[in-house]
Image 1 (cartoon, rainbow, N blue to C red):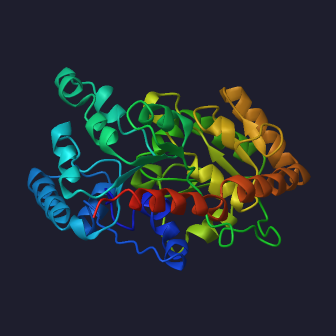
Image 2: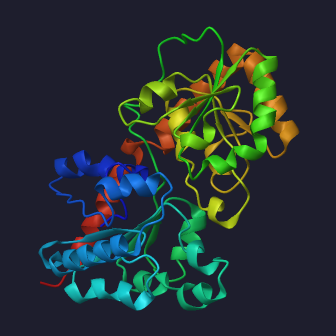
Amino acid sequence: MTKYGPVAASARQRFLLYQPYLADHQVELDLAPLIDGPRLQRTMGGERTAPTAALHAYVGRARALLASRRYDVLWVHYELFPYLPGVFERLIYLAGVPVVLDYDDAIFHMYDAHPNRMVRAVLGRKLAPLLRGATAAMCGNRYLLDYAAQFCRDSVLIPTVVDTERFTPLASRRNTAPVVGWIGSPSTWKNVVPLLETILDVCAANGAKFRVVGAGPQSRGIPGVDAVDWTEAGELGDLQGFDVGIMPLLDLPFERGKCGYKLIQYMACGLPVIASPVGVNTEIVSHSETGWLAATKNDWRLSLETLLANPAKREAFGRRGRKRCVERYSLAATAPTVHAVLQSAAATRVR
């Protein structure tokens, strides 16, 4: 049970990526998103969900719960009913089916750090009942794991990963001018904005391009920004077209729960990386080995200038980053653990 359908990155990264491996091990996966189709496209474009659309989604989720007894495990992304009190989350346990939860964002901060005092009071601990009843919780980083482990004893660290058989480096770089690249979504573009002037200045001074994939309309029309729409078919080619991959990140509670997926994509494609030293970024990036952690604007300037001026260093960082990704952040590295968690949960079901 996911929040979004397969177009959303989280559904693809945390669930559908494992579908072939699970099928090979006789585990069938049915996806039951809360929001999908045109409604999902509008949500991803930044539109607020209309009350009638939310009600329709909740009714659909309730129907899915009523039909859930036929499953051996219910694998739930985040929560069941966003912005409803925690008592509604407990409804899932009426089916008597083991529940495995999955977190790759600090969604608890949507509630406990909400600017509205009433929301904090009513919903601040809404995930606690869901976590307490869960058989296990799979968490994308230690920040999320520390939260989940307060309520769910069997909480497991499962980083967000890529299929490194698909995400591979190009045999040779083809760019006449180096390309500094960022991939993301309209909601995460805000992390780039404070550094945009610095990035563009360095690119202009070094004959490089700054290519932005997936930021939406807010990135278009900015001089020096090559804005590209994200498509699933074009994602790999866009990544392979970069020479340097970047991940600026604001040092805020919600951002500390990010799983560094774009860094993992870059490294799988053999790219050197530069990232803010926030949250899991400090674990994914091996400083001065696979890239740099840049805390200040001057750090970003120096890191970009050095990599743009030194193709050999870019190649060395990228080669080591690829190796690190294959060993730690690949489908092959995590799939057996995901399978084991689901199998162990299924074994607890009382028939």
